[in-house]
Picture 1 (cartoon, rainbow, N blue to C red):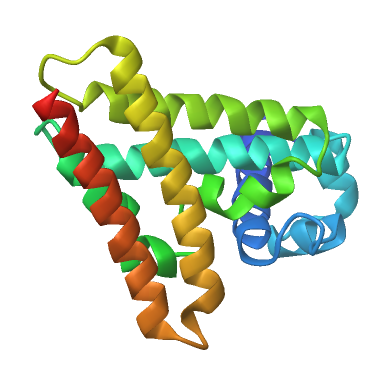
Picture 2 (cartoon, rainbow, N blue to C red):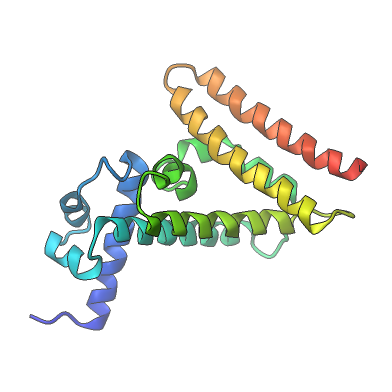
Length: 198
């Protein structure tokens, strides 16, 4: 039986949503394609009709999840232009730490992206560069484009690492988890303040 274009698009969306949630929750290697298909309410044959490999599914799910986070960011900011302080506050928040299944797919997949194939690495790189550019645009003052990029690279890389560590220690030592986020936030905002002094 043929599936309409609308139903096929709906199925693809369901697969990407289920894969993104499961991959962020348990990791790419911790989830089988049959689990993704079941979570989406489809068969694994339907999954393979859209994604010929798990690697391509993971790559598409990362891009899909990142686009959704950008949509959330736009909805959160409304019409106002976000500042570097806004980004720093969000990047190193306990909310970001605790939102594993709806959180940033970069923080969830950073340690795995290097172990997976080139398709996921490319999607990770593209999303990382997009986020770096977004934060760099929020850096104001008489600063060179290279200095903006360097500070933004540091902020996004620190965000990914800090969230990973904060999640790893949160169950055993919540105070340490919060201290990691606070210290990283403070270091990045200090670097931002120092750029004004130069």
